[in-house]
Amino acid sequence: MKFLSVMPNLYTADIEASVAFYRDLLGGTETFRTPASGTPVHVEIRVGDVTVAISDRDEVEPQGLPAPSPGHPFELVVWCDSADEAVAGLRAAGVQVLVEPSAHASGNRRGYLADPDGNWIAVVSA
Image 1 (cartoon, helix red, strand yellow):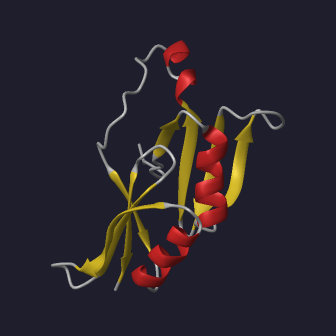
Image 2: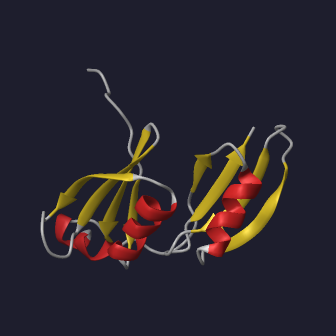
């Protein structure tokens, strides 16, 4: 058996707001939506080399899983050419900045934002 890829799937209370964040503010491209028309329950957005799936959290329980609880079990890392410029531009677009960009122990610059559901987004540049 060969695993082909890994795709993070974010559960959201407001799928349209999350899609707008990843597509419009982070420059992603929508590659899949179901249903194809009307309010979606699942959308996939490609940002660079990675596809992020976004699903309506109300669609989880009918599949036999418990409803996802809010929290921060992970962060999504977005690499860019300038963390400072990216954070400034996203702040101007109304995105909540959690931590201003600063030098990280790795030698990179790193700042933190929140997506519409409060998920942590690390914005990192070399």
